[in-house]
Length: 284
Ligand code: ZN
Image (cartoon, rainbow, N blue to C red):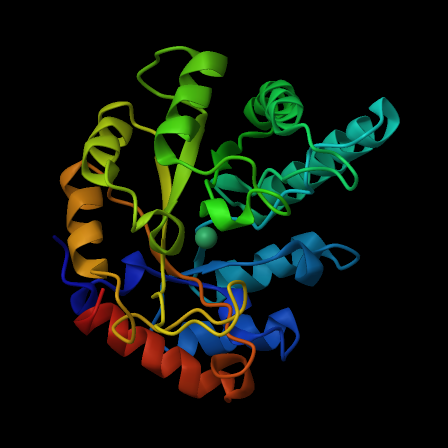
């Protein structure tokens, strides 16, 4: 397993970790200063701005983009809304290409408001992912499905398990040696899965791991969405999971992604970055 203290190029920051306190330009410079090699911006920092100028700023800071977050939720009650969701994601994939991001992160969405049809939601996700995969191939951007902890199934992601994500990849793309469709492994969402070791080995074999997200699960957790912990502060054996991911052949970025409204988002971004960089070296 790589020593992240000695591999800044493998260390990336998902900008959500910094609480969107500063404009993207300021964040880019701070991330580079703190000794990271990568950054994963969010659409809220990019859409409506000059995307090529942001891309240039990232390059000139010596950073690479590890991913672009994230998709508009897919499932909808009407055909019209479903198509609008797919179209919004096509535009975001174009921005991912302009940023030089290798992948577009898809948090697929849960039940549309008023629906109890999770099977229908999953069918819409499968159909839309196939369409977006075609668009991504043309744009040169891989599609990265991020399974979320099942507690989010209603509101954020009807895709919960790594095995489900891999099955969906295989269903849509078939077996291929250089796939354009893959998954994000986020320790917060997958740590509890009793089949994690088996499924990570499969994900590596099938060449489907497009990103690795690190944080920790705090006990107690005060907010299931916005109380994520810094690596080392919770109950996830993050190094063990990274070991499995790297043993499976993954050589990409380790991206810190911490939603923490009452703690890290309130701290100065330089302090959060410094702590993330240290914990990548010691607790990830
Ligand atoms: Zn994530």
